[in-house]
Every structure is written in structure tokens, then in C-alpha cells.
Image (cartoon, rainbow, N blue to C red):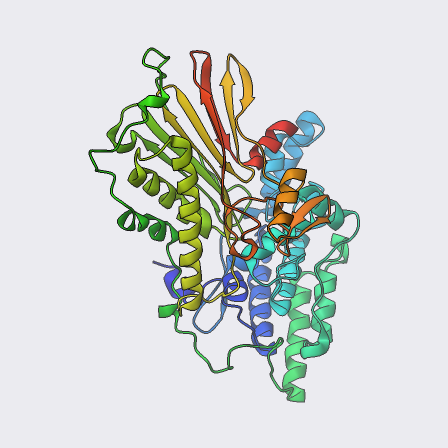
Length: 504
């Protein structure tokens, strides 16, 4: 309950990138000063925050900032002790050292942290500079977009994690600097540049920063400088956004509502899928489990479902995972809609056709619901086009059916050897590239691979992504396999996990 009073205007990241709030110069200076004083106080106590960013800055009803999330904070003396212990014992940092010191959020991390050096007060200063520049520009660092979900996609499109790290550390890459054109004080812009200097010793302390901000604010007061918005603003300055109508929609619930609109699967005339199974064939005994974690992202965009005993048939199972991009909406919707449709379709058709129908119906329903949502008063961000790749499997007796749309993967372990049950639908595949072009889509080479359309997606099939339809289709590719006693387990996961395992 403690945070509710301080969360009336959400966090600064949400305010900038979802509500697309445009502060005045005085608003920006007030937030900058109070954040600087908060960090000055921490540093005087010997505490390093280590994850300064807009998402960790809560705003009250008067837009006064509160620095939060001290999960990574440490006393500077404790960090030094851990470092000395590790260097004494092995001559180099251990894995524990990396976990304790290589922390934060990549786009706000100082070059020395990316080099795995010790975190100091000046590392917080760097993150502060990146965050204040984001406040002034309204742009997610290293992108040209204000919408956070889309900006993360563009960031990944332009840089891999290693490329961005190298560019920041070796090439001196920094976000596009705020401009004086809209009344931002030149001394404030200069201060930001000093804060993100490559050399930590050249960065100011928060004592210096507070003194500089005092001078800037006093100068504006003496000169009676007119306050103004620092960017073009769509809302009138006195316009109050009624948050009653801005509540975020539950896409999981919307997907589940398809159950009521789908046909019932209780018709006694439905035939079963037993015709796809030989009476004397091998009958696998299934056990199952799942694990999901957010990883380094700010929010979880991936979902899954487990659906044992479809229509109360003991030998029929369904499983699916959905890898969201440009936001989590499509993945959340699909994780409820696909199993609901599978249940309602029952055994009216072959397992392969049932999977295709479930994907296509989910895609159509999601895009319809999304369009309705964008037109409503509930939606703040109108230019949103979330999507997700998907892979689902049905096990019926000794038959395994896999439906894949995108770059999720399924691998069967047979007699200790991996067997791929899916292939990636990406623009680097010639056949997929040609299919996209035939259906009116555009492909282009960017950074290190082929990509689709202005959003520059790598995948060529997905649920959602309505701005790229029909070229980026939701229709899955189906594979069918006979299971045998040598089959040990089936793994389905996202492409990134397989890349990581390959590197390891």
C-alpha cells in the first residue's frame, strides 16, 4: 500500500512512452533536481543505486519523482570487499563477481560497467545523464521512437547486445542529445554530456550537479524566462487525462472470452482422432512441465499453455508457447485463445487442420479486438501493432503434430539425438522472402539480415502484426511424426534460447 500514494502518475518511463507526456522546461528541471538530490543523499551515505532509469522513478500527483527499486543497490564498501576477495583468490573476477557487479539495464549502463569494472558513484551519474536526456527528448535511448514496446524492437533491430556494448564502450556511442531549439538551457545539455563522459573521472559528482542545477534554475527565475513545453504536445497544457478510461486491457481475458463465442465441443457425433493411431502402436506415457522467466527485459512478453486430456480424452494433449514482440498483447491473447479454440473444435477435423484453424482464428480475433481497442477511450497509444510467433503441438496416441508460425522451435530427443520438428520462418529464408513479396510485403537488408517492412521484423509469420498483413501470415507450417519407445522428451522454446545454448 505504501507505493500507491506515490504511483498516481505511474513511473517516468510509462509517463513518457505510453502516455506520451510532454513536460515543460520547469517540469523537467524540477524532476532533474529532485532526482539529483536523491542520488546525492544516497552517495553521501555510501550507497550506490546501480539501476537508475525512468522505469524506477515513480511520480506522485504533482509529478514529484521518487527513486525506487533498490534491489541492486549496494554499499560501496561492500562492492570493494567482494572485488578484493575475488581478485585475491583467483587473480580475476569470479562468476559471483560478475553477478554482483555487472548489473543494471544495458542501455543505461556506463562503459566501465560494460567492461565489467567496479561500479562507482560515477556509474550512477552516467545512468542519470542518460535518463535525463530521455526525459528531455521523449525517446528511448539509441532509438528514434517514443513508444517503448516498439523501441525495444528497433533497438534489437539495429544492434545486438554485443554490438551495442562495443559501440558504447569503444566507439563512444550515446543517445541523440536534447536540443536547445525548444528552450532547453544550454548548460543543462552541457551537464548531460559531462554526465555520460567515457572517463568516469571527468563526470561531475552529484554535489556538482545539484550546484549546477541550482544556478540554471536561479538564472531562469532572475531572467523571468517563460516556461514552455520542450516538444510539440498533442494535449492542451491544462488537459487532464482521465485515467478511469485509460486502464490497461487484459489481453489474456480477451483471449479467454473466445470460449463463449466458439462452437461447443459436446456434440456426440464428433469423431475422435483414433483413426490417426494404430491400435497396436506404441502408447507414450506423458509427463510435462514448463519454466518461464523475464530475463533482461523490463517486462515479460512470452506466454505458454499446457492442455492435457483435451475433451476428457486421456491420450490427447496440447501444448503451446508464444514469443511476443512489440509488446505482450498478442502473446497474452493467444495463450488463452488457442487452447480455448482447440477445446471447442474438439475432434471435428484432423489434428493438423485443427491446429491451423486455431492459429488463424486467433489471429483474426486478436486483430479485430486490437482494432476495437485502439478506437476506444481506453487506449492511450494508438500506434500499436503487437505480434507474437507461436508453436503448438498436439499429442494424440502415438502421433505428434507440430504447428509453427515464426521462429520458435521444437526439438524431439530420440535415442539421445536431437531431431528438429520445425524450421524458422524468417526473411533470411529465400522461400519465405519470396512469399512475403508475392503477398505485397517489402523486405530489405538491415544490419546483418533480411527484414520485413518498416517495423523491420525478422520473422515472416506471426499472430498479430496487423500492419504487415497479409504478407506476414499467421498460417502455421505443420509437421507430423510417429512416436516410439526411443523418444525421451520434446523441447519447445524460443529461438533466443537455442542461440544461447549454441554459444555455450
